[in-house]
Image (cartoon, rainbow over all chains, first blue to last red; front, side, top):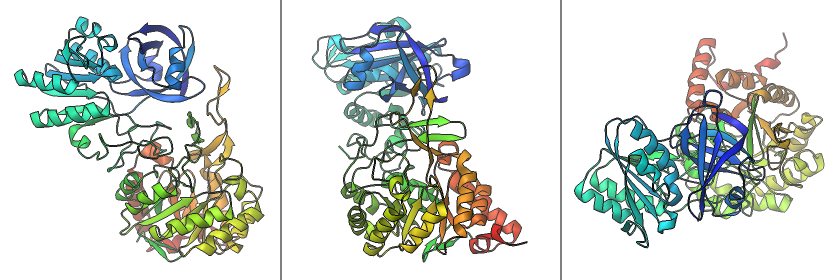
Length: 266
Length: 303
């Protein structure tokens, strides 16, 4: 883990969907630290700095997958191969990747598929049997649609508009899957409203799971307090971003509100 | 054994959370109190909400961190909702407030004093906008005016938090005492400091300059507490680079009646408070001290 930005060159850019790109860069695991799936890095484009989930952990290479949703991400999308960015991290409490030979359900919504891709890639290597619910609003926005299948995951595509795969939300698709199957464990990342719905379903089905949360972040090293959540005060940057269901139960703001850069709730 | 009294306010132990660290909402402050702190100082807030600076706002350097968060806060109306939710039983709650004018400070005091035990005036932030923070605390006249205004409006003890970034900290300490401050806390972050990334030849912080905190500023904080202890008669709270019980003993021997802990949370976790309390109690027992009172200012004895 490093606490000051390391300057790296972008070695590859993949246009994943019309709004999402993946950026790859070299990362010397020995000198800079090897991240676990679910951890995040702070990306500095010399104008601003934001947290990004690690989407791929390869041999001395990391990748982040970024959706163009605002000024900062739009600036990232303008970058070309060979351009530089600053990276510090990796930070946070990642997913539990110690499972072997289990039946796992992984659910990702939109760009929330990024950390799901990292954990699924890891767990497949460990001999787990994995069903993935890959959800997006429409066919063009489905992320990692083929690469996860190539890895050996059983992918259930799901689109809001029904343009590909299951028609409906990730929650509906998950409910359907649970009619015929059960799972040893689950991993979830996506819009919080989706995760809240999935949480209720998995709790009812008695399936333990881990959820990756997102909050406004400043320091990323556990001191500024910007990302602390009600009611336990946990820091998303240290105690999170990944929480197990017993802890999610205690995050009373989960699915209800969050705070902006000033700390005002919205 | 660990109890300490400051301006009539009883602390169950001499450790509190420093301003600006994890003090943005009631939940995190309650967690700090559960973890062993005798008191919490909130993150500094102002009359209106403020987003602070753009990231990067923090960077780690040798011996600590440099930060320029920029006094982000949701404004007093929102912050009062948080103060109301802090579990005050057996704990001391201190509001840190900032503004630019005497009126802003006295309005803030009036707004929050019923919800807290003490109020700390941030006249020392080294990276605040012009007219705020250290630009007040580096000027004796301005400090006097602001402290007087806050004191006049307040029924609870007023703490003035001092900046080390002055020619003579005792001069500003005496000014604050004259203006009616009940207590002083020192020091705020040192600096400004700066970190330049040599690969891209750019300052890392978006604000370029920030305040330095952490282990490396402790000797400066100790010397400032020692000097100010000899210059004023009001109680002192020590802040700056405290990581363990030995550091706390040093601050108390220099003249502090309590201490505030901030950056150590990054390295030691929230558990730092419990760990320090245990070590401090063991040390006091071994040395035969029955109270913090017996230890305050011991380093000033003539041989």
